[in-house]
Amino acid sequence: MAFNLLNAETADILAIGGTLIMGTEQKRGALVIIGGAEDREGELLVLREFIRTAGGVKARIAVMTAATGYPREVGDEYTDIFERLGAESVEVIHTEHRDDSEREDSLRIVKEATGIFFTGGDQMRIVNFIKGTSLDKVIHNRYEEGAVIGGTSAGAAMMPDQMILGGTSVANPSVDAVSIGPGMGFLPGILVDQHFAQRGRLGRLLAALVLEPAVLGLGIDEDTAIIINGDEFEVVGRGAVTVVDETTSTHNNLEGLLKDEPIALCGVQLHILPHGYRFNLKTHLPRFVEKGKG
Amino acid sequence: MAFNLLNAETADILAIGGTLIMGTEQKRGALVIIGGAEDREGELLVLREFIRTAGGVKARIAVMTAATGYPREVGDEYTDIFERLGAESVEVIHTEHRDDSEREDSLRIVKEATGIFFTGGDQMRIVNFIKGTSLDKVIHNRYEEGAVIGGTSAGAAMMPDQMILGGTSVANPSVDAVSIGPGMGFLPGILVDQHFAQRGRLGRLLAALVLEPAVLGLGIDEDTAIIINGDEFEVVGRGAVTVVDETTSTHNNLEGLLKDEPIALCGVQLHILPHGYRFNLKTHLPRFVEKGKG
Image (tube, rainbow over all chains, first blue to last red; front, side):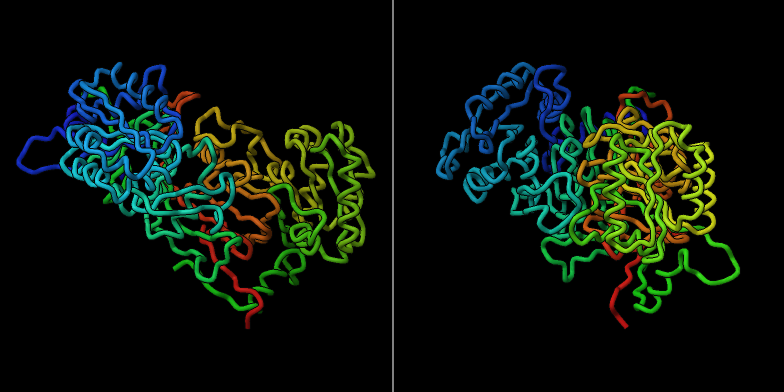
């Protein structure tokens, strides 16, 4: 049986494992990966957890608007929300050209941030404007030092080494159902898709898994997030996270497959994990932590 | 390794295993279950296999229009197609009330049929107009005697003991994502959903599997069919069949779950099987039969 029911005390200790851990060892930050369309007006369940993970009322947030074509509006909206949740500071970094990613003021904001949040839009813009620049370097440095990286929709898709650029929703898996390109490299060996159940994207996630060396596919629903801390993530929000584990796969037909032919894929393991469930990225085992107990 | 590559001879012997088998033992007929929107103008790949399975140029087909609100038009269309494919006879049975299912002429047509084909429409109409009537009894008798039962869309959904009546597509699994009722009982222990990839129905199939005692869910794409012969089915057509095997499941949260809460489901096995793949309903193992070999 893969499940351990921990009591609230143990769960709380795990929950503060991220950036706040005491000890001599420097610890990489958490990742908060949101499937898009997160609530921005009601209880803010998902964005609340991003700010909490990034330091709560001591959080210093940098909002990265690279993905969106409406950087001012989107930047203002997240600034309002994060200030409403009590973040100590919120600064917006607009990058509409690669040159913007060399600006000293932007680098300084990131160097002081405890949380770096990527908005939605087009994930290609994030990679085109930021990947390989000085801004990219300081973001990764801050992540290694313990800052939390958050992102929604395009800001979620860009997290892995290889990211899903686009493709057909509600289709069976085929090579031309999905296009893939280099991502921002926060999450090796994993593929992320967003708006997952809402847009029926299982087919394209499976196709991407067969095509890429990644062994784990994470389909994140709208208004739902995973918070990755160390080897484990927790699901937060109204939807669910679909985990596709390709390591158990017994067969695929990739060899000799042409572009418009349907992919065959046998024996992958599937987990549907709603709020409160956790998944270990090393052991590939899910578990449920009962809250408010003990 | 779950795969055996058989040569064409072995495959051919299996392929004629259905209604044409020689021997002393009476054999139940095949089921041809089509995911809807099958080609009716081009190569007729899927309908062609239905007629082939039902006896080829010796096939005597009964077309059941119970599901559709346009019984004449739909009946005429399938009659044209099945005659074009060379069926020996095609007769249409309209049942627009339960009384129609007691008509002697309809019973006689079914008693002489080698293939009984259910059109698309609303699966509730099939159950309401036919289940428990004399027509139901003779259809099941003919099936036990070796006649092939075929159906597309609603005619596919009605095959199991418990059928999916409707529900939300492209949503994560929840109790209110799916409604279920008694089906026509040709396929115990299995749930069938159709238009599967095209309408993003994984969520509702998973929800149905958690709610019902069925252990295997089959999601059949449009213009795609499974042909069940004995313990094995073969996939035919342009799309794929998604097999969800719940027997490997390690956990679900059904106990105490309320209607609008997301379902958790861990450790189910998933197979995506395109044209030419087979799946054993007893062992739950897929395999690929290479054609035109040996």
